[in-house]
Image (cartoon, rainbow, N blue to C red; front, side, top):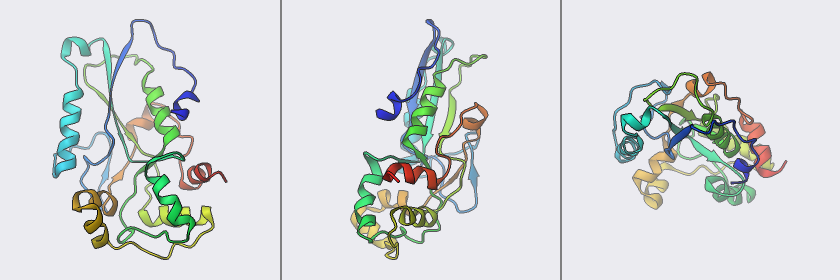
Length: 218
């Protein structure tokens, strides 16, 4: 909420309306160590989460007569990093205690975005397009950097000046979180914000160093 309030108000004509589908995961893209995904990548549901994303996006689309005068926007964020909640709030305590470590192998991609940049993409999408379309505009809410879980873990440890020597085995996450939730952490996707960048949006926190320093207050 504070991130949204800190943004300048967009210029919106009186007759302009906008419909949002904020899908809280980039889980529509199948986990892969090699494949790179953009907003233009074709995908088909392959598990429960991806089917859920497909249904959410379909449910959010407007009828054609309404879509002609309403901009439709779909945003697919990666892991949202912020100071006051989400995954970061749960991770900071064990990392402060020197108990932080990679999840599983650590080789899995870790698509992420700072909460302020996610708010910025939403505000940016409120600007009306010069050429209206009845099709939704899709934006990947991730930074351009293709980081891994290992890189995120080590950078958070450096920022907090704490060791990161206790990896969390994949089977441990399966047991305590369930396999469907654990797969979000132990597998990942290489997601690029191609359309987000082409729209003219500029990231305030494009790298882990600047984002994590802001979050922990350094």
